[in-house]
Length: 306
Image (cartoon, rainbow, N blue to C red):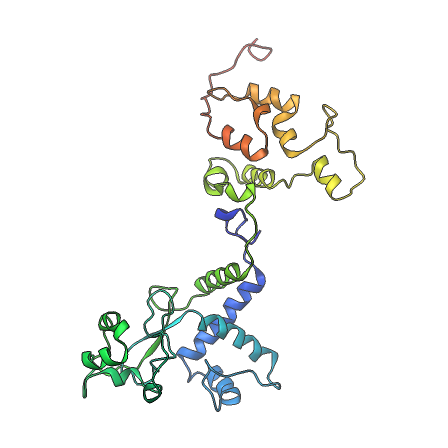
């Protein structure tokens, strides 16, 4: 249910992942405003010898600080540098070539160049790139680096959140980034028929009530309380259809049962649709939803018409 609606879920937020995004928000606050009271207290206690991005949790650290470091780790995976003066950015270890994803210069770095800062690639007395030095140190990245415009006013280097065009961290974008990371780290599973459903088109964007949409979602997932599901869960209830006494499944309930067939025959739909041809619930619904619905034509013959 925590999957997006477009991928077959209900769009609920995963509580654990959302908590990590909230912790990352605290980490972002510490990074961007290290002089605030919260940052001064935490950094003064736990980051006396290392920076916030590089520090490790000591064995005596509190549960709260360990949580903040978990959020920090989420931040680290999507942080980049906006080059200002270049004095605080290490060339080989920091993602200062990043745009949408983290990019670092590839090495190995020569021993005498291991501790270079980005400012060392500028012409003396300015923030213009030294092209000759770029060709010597980072020839494969020269064109990419020349597109970067350092600050001419001496502005300090600034960390930015790469998942947002503005560079600011928001809990929503943090949650989406954490969800992507979790999905990429989860072993891939074989594709199932449910994965082939175009959920937005087939369910969520159709013109009907939310109650019907939820019913369709349950049907396509096989989550209705029918005899087949009772048997799978070893529930001691009859698995037979109450109308025709055959094995009851979702496909049987909606398409194969003689009573369901009569309902489809009475539905005001243009075109021919034989529900018994549907091998599965998904196949039946994908065919049925494409049939145009005819407009009402008034009261037909019968007792009401009389």
